[in-house]
Amino acid sequence: MSKGKTILDKKKDFERRYLRSLSVQADWERNRVTGLLAVSANGLDVMDVTGKHFLDFGQSIAILGHSHPDIGRAISNYIPKYLVGGTPGWSMMEPRVLLAEELKKNLTGRLRDEGKVAYCSSGAEACDYALGLARAVTKREIVISFSGAYHGFTGATLAVSSLDPGFAAHRSPSRFGNVLAPFPDGSEFGGDTVAIERYCVEKFKELFETAVSADEVAAMIFEPIEVNAGVRIPSLSFWKKIFETCHRHGILTIVDEVFTGLGRTGKFLAADYYRVEPDIVCFGKGVGGTLPLGAIVARREIMDGNLKPNCNSASAGNALSCVAGIESLRVIKRDSLTEKAGETGRYLRDELLTLSKVHNEIERVRGLGLIVGMEIGPKEDHEEAKKRATSLIKLCYENGLLLIQVGIHGNVIRITPPMLVTRGQVDTFVKRMDAALTAA
Ligand SMILES: Cc1ncc(COP(=O)(O)O)c(C=O)c1O
Image 1 (tube, rainbow, N blue to C red):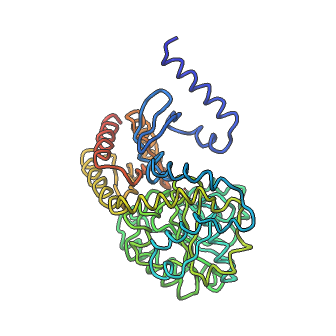
Image 2: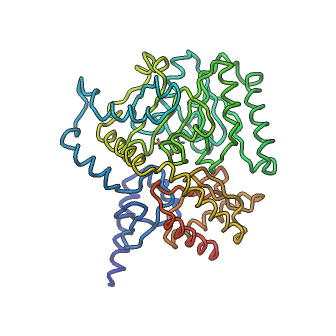
């Protein structure tokens, strides 16, 4: 038996064990379009057990790439001190305070000056905290969210998500108390973003005449750009108009920056592009420097006395996750990665736009910083477009690229490389994408 065959056999064996003993992830991966069994990952490079290397352009958590040496070193240094369990008095651990201070420094306005942080362990939990907090503060129950939203898989966050009807099947009680508003997507109304945004703002205002009395609404939760729904990006005036209506009715504003936060769009928050100051900000994914962590930030007057006992968790704010988060923010600042995310993101978009002139199946390219979506056509046939996107992802995989398929119609390739991606790596990416599109 050749050596290569042995490795493949082992890979198959392991996959069988994986599918037999794990549930949720395995169920998702049963439908996967790649056959990756990663054994190591550094930066953007991921190696399969067979020795094949991939460029990871589909990251959501490792915003500084995999196994970042500075983060690894910081964690190792602090293991002797902070591999600890909670005990009275331990909440005051230094990393929790330092990370909270660092997060606030990156925010603007009153969140920077009067902000307080509450930790949890994931992005969904952060949004869940925010919803509980808003309800406690306002003594109101109803929450407005947007079509295409994804805020997580807890009961409360599923209720305000509307990306896939399957997500909330059999959990309908959790949906009570949610009102849905349309999210602007330029592909409707023939791509006329002005018209669709005017329509969405009007529909939002109309909710208070048709669906719900404003004094029953605790909060409005939103992603500044909807990544999972297909990288949908409203124009720069949209959120200001929605905020005006919320302020008029005393409705709290919750921004979900779980995907978009920490600089990957070219600004610390994607909401910063829209010049709005939300009442509550939710962080997840990269906030723990690739370790599990979530956090919310809100002004003292909102946070104090209102969060507990609504939200708490034994593992919230794990000290080593905070150490990794602090180091991650330090590297982002030291290496000017937020500015670079903006610049490299523009370069990446321009290169993809050039590709779209040669390959007709690329319907649209859009993005903010290093969050880019490449929409696959034909736009009049969603099923066919989704099939083409799936087969393109497979071809990309064969060409050494890791990517994710997203979008309400499943026809958008999500291109989200870590923030330290170089122009050279973008060039390699574009070359491989070109090859995949040519083979499609
Ligand atoms: C915008 C957004 N909010 C919330 C979540 C949920 O975060 P987590 O998977 O850490 O629970 C995600 C995860 O993909 C997300 O993209």
